[in-house]
Length: 204
Image (tube, rainbow, N blue to C red; front, side, top):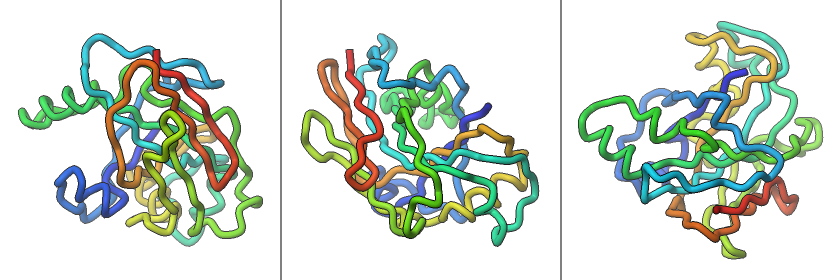
């Protein structure tokens, strides 16, 4: 199982980080050791002082495929969940300033908290109109809708599969909306799709 992530997929998030709008989806990966499941607590590591939350819709790949045509891409995932792409922003900025890869800032242990459940695709009325949000200590910090994506689910799957074979059980984090910000020890991170809670993570 691999974890593939999409960067810069929401215009307002691109603007808040002062990044350029990409011509194609930006792809990066996390190792499976980044997964934090079943609402386990996240323990703040000592190599960073600035971890940011990034809430994202997550696709679960349901069959193997490569060179997938966009019109058929919807048949390659069967459920949608919610997760966090936790990012060591200070480390990322340092690496980017030296034109170095920034996997260490994105792929560290526990950097991908994932909701305990996935919701079957058939239970969504419209995949291009899915509301989701992150609350930190009861305050809404991020909220987005799948309609705001620069590259929708089918485009993402088709594009990735031109380079990387997708396999059953792979996870795709589809990008974060605006509102990213720092977390601290003692915070409670709660994620929702529509009004259904998907994760509840304590920062320790």
